[in-house]
Length: 551
View (cartoon, one colour):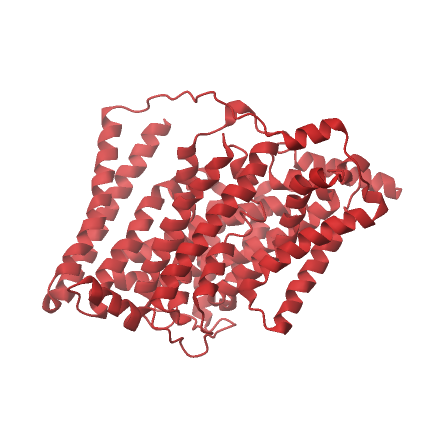
């Protein structure tokens, strides 16, 4: 078979893979802002929050630096969604993968998705390890320590394999129902963080005023003194981490898949619900719980603070975040295996993820991995940004790879490689890992534009139609969604009971917080028991409500 025939066959297979993503989302499929507020609020209160919030404590961040850094960093993340990602999404209404194919060519898109899948597997592996930290309590298994790179016991490996097997099975058999169940978990999960922090605070010292609360925060939680072997971080580290921890989603444009359903680009500001509930409130609460345990063990943190319900929360948080992450990895891997059934791809991704989860280096170095994850994908996001916004203004032809039928856009590939090399080299001049992505992004944008001028095959010049389409934003659809009333009196009863249970989860720790130090242990035991009761009532009522509403 000739090389041209092989390329044509590969393109045909890729076309089959993108069968459902190639067309822009139509107006009748768009959603209003409440949908995006709920999605962000649910997605960003997850298993990673147990780890990241506690890691800030272990790295010796000071209390004032933490709060200021989270305020600024999360604000910059919201702006990145609202000003970078959402505007492109509502113009093209395509997923990143299909839009990237037009810009970079099918060949480079294959490479990008395989890299993306590997990174997704590592991230999902960290989430399985979070769940395993809670399960290990039940089997009295020794948990890995902060400095561990390899598994520290056969028991830990067995627990991870057990949890991984369950997660893989659920991902294959019931993804849609699991997604519905995850939406039920989200409000309760946030209250686990809040209630755990409130009930834990008296353990760190007596509280009679806000000044005493701040003193405890500075002297017992975020003390400015890192644990042995941990690097000390400051306010700018917090700012940049909060900004780039979701770099793949906003600046790297993975959330084009989400915002292509948005009516307006301003829906990007709804990301604030996720940032300030998850990446501010949950991180602070996790830090308070983490200050009461030695090392980094999310299961022990939650169990000490909330009891058995807390351990359940850690398990649920791990698999509700590992499942969609593993699912995304499976979708990305389908590029390399387009003839495989989806369950087979998910199985392969799940097995790789579970093996990764056995190694605590990925779990204990989550802050560094998140930074590396963002840096690796960042140059491609910069390429898409430059081609979408800057090429029309500079007179460069957009979608040259698509128009010429190229498998690989050479300037994009060179930009990716050179930018990653530059970011790696920044370490030799002392630039911290957290800070490298921002200069790397500007390097990628400038380099891609220069290469597209220099390399002759890239071409120049826009026709009038392209100029018009590039300079004119699409009109915002004004059609209102049709809403129907679902359920009846029994559904409203289930909803009321679920809401009452959530309120109870919020009020129960106040008795511990305002109680006497002499009765703290008894109050804590009572709180844990009643919190578990409220949890059972909530899940029974919420699941029944969702089931009746769906029916």
